[in-house]
Length: 244
Image 1 (cartoon, rainbow, N blue to C red):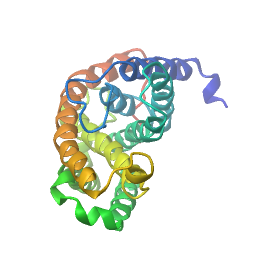
Image 2 (image 1 turned 30 degrees about the vertical axis):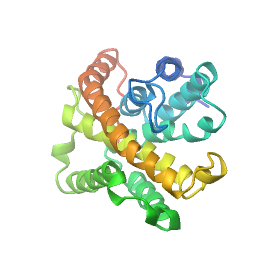
Image 3 (image 1 turned 45 degrees about the vertical axis):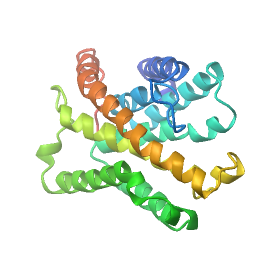
């Protein structure tokens, strides 16, 4: 409760929730073909995660997508899938702050659930190439943090490294994608909500492999350019949010 009485904390939640609302209320870029990220929330969620502490970023992004989806209505089912956005922010925040245990457990459980689902055996393995790459980057990042912490320094008062920001962005966004896949395939919503058969799911699957990688690349570029300056500005204002 003390934290909620802290004016800077409440202000940060409000500001980044408003940022998320704006991004989630706007129709996404030219690629809206597979049903992933109809809006620009994929820009906001990693920035929220990297700048804010994990559960603060989760809360801000959650408020943003609930309000944003109420403004730009995409159907009731989308409220379920868009829970991936606050989860993505949470994962980005953990990775950026050198906390890899929760992200590793998240990836392992959801990947295991996917491969244990019979219909997944009919889907092309390469359709999740970006998720596999993110998981590999997560494992590599965890090894770097354990063996050479100096290469992953986000606690200094200087501007954070752009490659750390970009990696944290990518791993968080693909955690969002993995959550959406979990809802779609292991939870069987492809059949119960969207009435797709295996061949139709395959078509959506292949489109998603193309679409999500392009949007993730856009987000990594924007995040690497913008986020370090936001963190530096907050540090100069006396708000040091990068803690392990």
